[in-house]
Image (tube, rainbow, N blue to C red; front, top):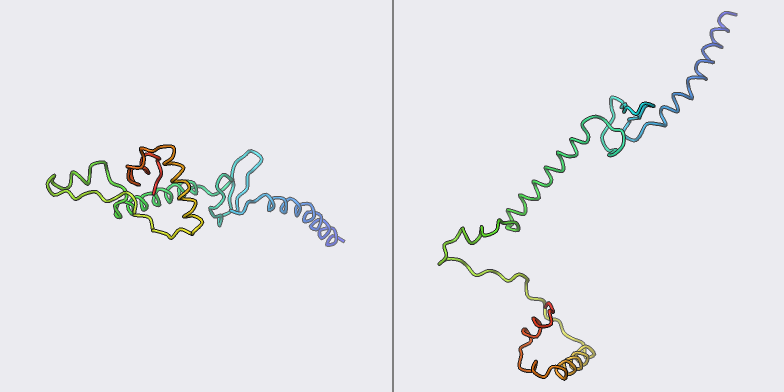
Length: 153
């Protein structure tokens, strides 16, 4: 009889505590951490980072900041090595005035593409209309007209 009483008491304790343990497991985020009623963050021993803005193990935010800083430094080094980022005047100061090379064009020349017959007719009509409005433009080169119109090649 005493064994049955103990057995019943153990079953009752398990039935009462099992839902509380299940609720606690449901509160954990994917990092293995949960927030208590007081707002404190508690994590399992094997908790991992990966829940930014949520409850996560100590040091995760600092690790993300360090990784971001390393990535920025690596990209900066890569840009400097390729010559993309230079201080103003660094190129000119490095070479004597009589040895300086001419600057390269800002953009490579666009590829020449063949116009369709319809596009050629449309271009001719547009040119005629423009030159009809501005007769002094006939003496200008195409490059001068592009600069005047603000068109990019």
